[in-house]
Amino acid sequence: MPDLAYSIPRGLVRALRFPSHFVTSTVFDLEVTGKEHVPQRGSVVIAANHFSHLDVPLIGLNLDRFLRFLAVDELYGRNLAFDAALNLFGAIPLDRDGYPVAALRTAIAYLEDGHAIGVFPEGRRVESWGVDPPKRGAAWLAWMTGAPLLPVTIYGTHVSMAPEARSFTRAASRIWIDEPLWWHDYTDRIDPLQSMMDTWYEVVNEHLEPWRSLDT
Image 1: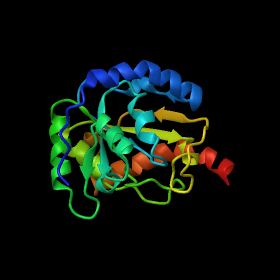
Image 2: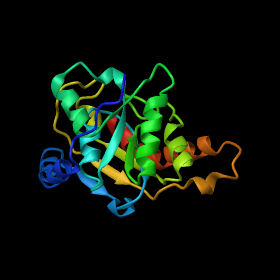
Image 3: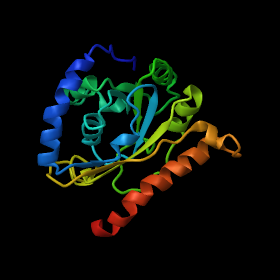
């Protein structure tokens, strides 16, 4: 699937930030921790866990940084409103069945221009954390462009618009943003990309593990 024409003005997303902060804090009782770790300029790879369709807007509108998300192409064409939302966040279609050359080239070019890319290393929405091991794409993008990889953890969205909870449900949600991981700190590892993603998993797991027992 070819990349969508990216013409949504960033000013529109910026204008949505203030009302979105109010709505998300009210509807989702959203609390965001660690915004000081988000670089205000320059390239950055945002790598987050993925429970729900709500993860994209909640992360995209609350990090105070405009970013494009890599999204599997099977999400397109099912719902016009959902397609419009993907366009709003400048989604880059990712071919999950083949080698996503076009999508990766688009992401690299966007990072090299000093922007932010959002990636879900699990590759899809999951019912529970830890079901799917993280893929290496986020680390590869950081490695190829020199961008920092920023671990982001989201919790609470697993009860709404998720694989086993498809309806919309109000729930308290949390976003944690941790210190960036830098590719040059992994150059001495046997498998630098895997080591980088192992660290990402450990950081996210540290936030989610205390909550897992509450969901069982």
